[in-house]
Image (cartoon, rainbow, N blue to C red):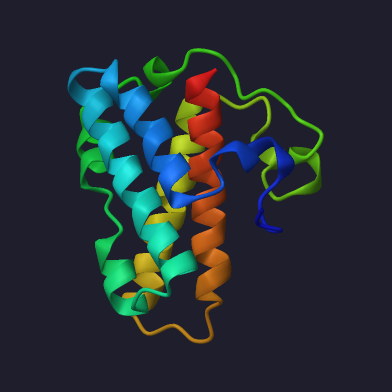
Length: 153
């Protein structure tokens, strides 16, 4: 198990488990939500490649995608339609940076994920130094796994 992952998210602690869980969720979706979840699956795969397979940093950052999210946000898509409830609390989340997301809606979690992706891409493009890239990828990955947990419930 990965020490940087809260216990609430341990069930999807590998790239394979994450991919299979997202594939099950995507299978029952159509249209915009399916496209968004597919983009989330892609971003999760990029994070796993960087964190576990030591993929090239520049290519990993370029591979992170936010086009579907941006398009849907511009059209006023209801991101809460992915999961209507609020993010359920868990004791292990209270001990992590995910604590502030407990009780939030799906839309706020997605915004948090994509804000971090955009900030990482911008900082890298502008050559900001020093950045703790591994920590930033982990933060994005944790939020994606929390989204997966939330949508699967």
